[in-house]
Image (tube, rainbow, N blue to C red; front, side, top):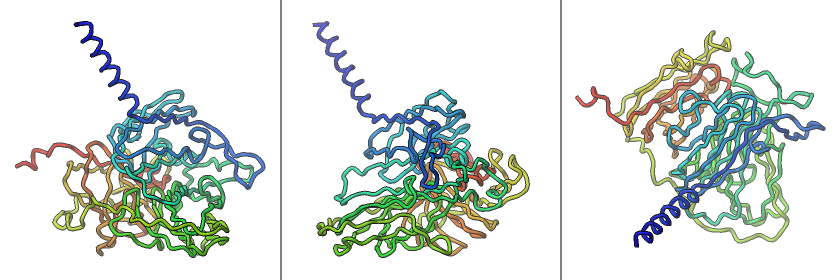
Length: 449
Ligand SMILES: [Cu+2]
């Protein structure tokens, strides 16, 4: 009898171990040197990549599941991975010296991600960013909804740019005085999914979900689909509260946009161009080519809109708890420092917030440059621009603060830990434009009095 009980208990234990091992989806990511073929050169360009490709593999997982990513560093310098936009345990956020030690060459690190929210995310290193990301270390992470809507197809467009030189290599000087004095490193070759002006094939009548990601070091895009009506259904991974038409959206490094686009039934044989209208003269990013075939029946459904949202009136009685003035000055390790309140990372002017308490932050850009400000671990709502109420029907994790502009945001910290906050123009961040928000679980004694 005793033997039987023992056997039964062992069996239960084995099953639970088996279940735990089966519950997490495991992905191996190897960061290593490799090659990428650009159309400008006869020979491939040396790059750094994940699993031999740039952008890295598209990782897909269902919301509510656990994803284990085993990073193996085959580079000749340390690295980490940050999961841009994911709200996860702080120890998995990938910031060296803050949430983990940098992963040394030849070493592994296991990222355990519990996927709480569906959406379009991306991953990239958080060590020597301006060089590692520019050399090609970046990839896409899609967290799928529990129930998938009947889209005809989904197209992922990872926008990026590269500064290439005549001998077919990546320009090897990083954080140059020119990049630092301007809006970072803008490349001379723009790619979508690593290709120059690729073609995407669709059929007439199709309803397509586009997922756009800006993975460039510094370039801001303004994507427009000429001749097609594009509806924004999610910004920075999260569904919007009101669906709106895509028009002049400043799509800065780090941002994501999910679009709902129906290909007209009579468009067989036509082509549509995805343009970047950010510069004075638009230029084509990609071509949407419609097959010359009879139309399919367009699926009818309502895309999800946000159920959980930060209402603006939540912040009505909240005073500004932090103002960060953004400007450059002489100093720092690169000779030009980009400061937040004239202080440079890691000696930054940091913020301390409490879990669940609404906070108001002002980013005041005293410079004439662009600063897409990104906060790890939270989403926020833009409340005001230059003291005028903003009407964005969505939340974000990255907001572009224009020259001399003042942007007021509201947020409620939902995860404790230390969450870095930085400009996503990577050269500005490298020059010091980074700080952190510490989120503590307990109220401070003085607030209880
Ligand atoms: Cu900046």
